[in-house]
Image (cartoon, rainbow, N blue to C red; front, side, top):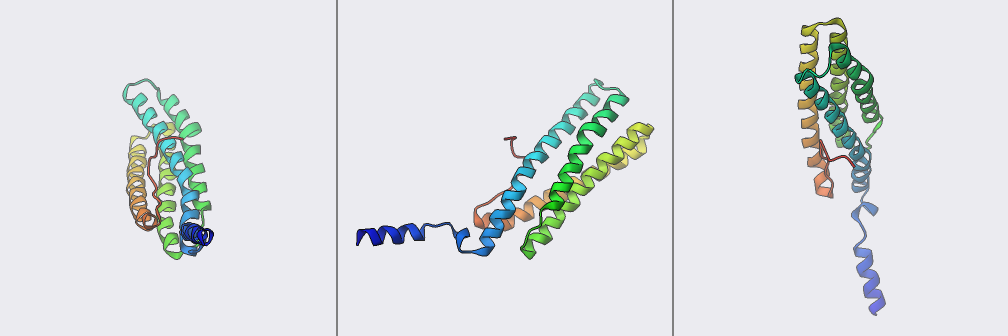
Length: 165
């Protein structure tokens, strides 16, 4: 009798994801996106460091353009590609994920425009890149808020800027 009670208790304690296909899809989506959010932290930190160096006049125009072109832009483009490669099965997640694609696409485009602006010494083009980066930030923030509304009932959460692992 004890053995059957213990077995029944263990079976009831199994994770919901084992029996609920929606929970399984939510878990898989979280597992795909969580490491990308850590990449987002690294990318943002790199850009903030570069911005600090520019403010402190520690980088010449050529150095800024080089760091943008060889460090930040490739990381942003890689992030964009990784986000696009995530293909959630749930319709509701697909709709929300399209915001992530839009946000990180805008971010990569903004950095690309900034590189071109630095190389061409075009402050107006740089300002356009900054505006696009602002749009990307708003879009990504909306994505994180909306995706967490879907994830949290299943015990998952995405941080926009988690600490690096």
